[in-house]
Length: 194
Image 1 (tube, helix red, strand yellow):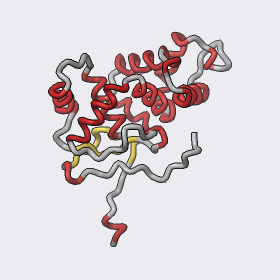
Image 2 (tube, one colour):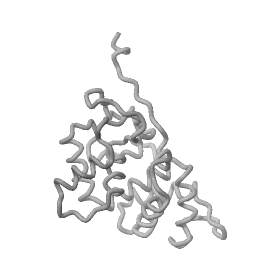
Image 3 (cartoon, one colour):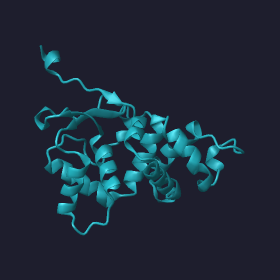
C-alpha cells in the first residue's frame, strides 16, 4: 500500500529545455558561459569542458577545447539542442555566474511553497527536469512576484524564468495544484559520477 501512495515522478531530459527557450536567449546564455569560463569554479569549468569535448565538434580542431571561444559558440548551440549533459553543465555555469539572482529566486520559490532542493545542490546529477509545475505560477506571475520584491533589480524576465526552471528542476509541462506538488527529492545519486 505504501508504494501506491508514493507519487510517481517523471523526468524530461535536460535538453528538453530547448522547447521552452527562444533561439536568441539560448545563444545569449551559451555566449555568456563560454566567455566567462575563467570566472567559474574549477569543478564547473571541468564539467563544461568534459561535455564540450564529448559533444561539440568544431571544424579544424581535433580537440574542441582548443578552439577560441567565439568559434565554439555556434557548434555549442547545436550540441546544446541534443545533449542533456552539455545542457546541465552550461546551465550550472550560467547559474553560478548569477549568485544574487540565484539566491533571490530560491527565496521566492521557498516563500511560494515550491518543494525544491537546497540552493547549492548539484542539479547536474539529476536525470532531467520534473514534468510537473505548480498551476497558477507561470513565468509572468513569477516574474511579477520577483519584481514586487526586488523593485530595483535590473534583470530580464528570461533570466528569472531560467533560474526558476533550473532551481526548481521543473519544466512547465504538466500543471498541478500546489498541494499536489511532487517532492524535489533526487533519486539516489553516486557522488563520484561525473
